[in-house]
Amino acid sequence: MAHPPPHPRALVLWVIWFAMLCSVFLYQLILGKGVPHGSNLQSSSTPPIVWVAIAQVAAASFIRWLLIPRTKEVPKMVVLMIIGLALGEGVEFYGLFLVPHDQPETKLLLWILSILGIAQFAPVYAKRPTEHHDAFHGSSGPF
Image (tube, rainbow, N blue to C red; front, top):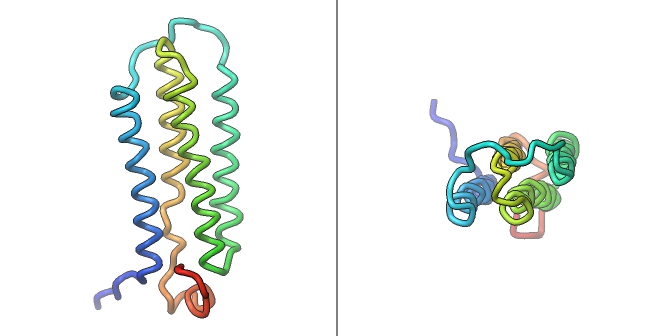
């Protein structure tokens, strides 16, 4: 038995997520001039920006794993998803613009954190209308 096609609203969430995930790769390849490789020139302690990035990805994880599953309305779910994706994407900008070029290990770490922060928002939580009746019926917005 074939599964019914995904609900258009779920498709919108998948498109948003995929676009955000692809953008992190494009930013790194175009603005970052490829995947960072090599060792950091300065062997000092962990830069403070890494701790900020870890806290940001942790906040995104809190949104993804604790807030989104409790959300019953699709417009609120979309807002939470966008906030979480933005938190994950922001980490990539730290690596691109705030970390010097002589710190490729740090740049790579931030890029990986950004990918993981965004990947966790894959909208598997966007259920079909029959599985989550309240979320897909009666909303007044575009979602």
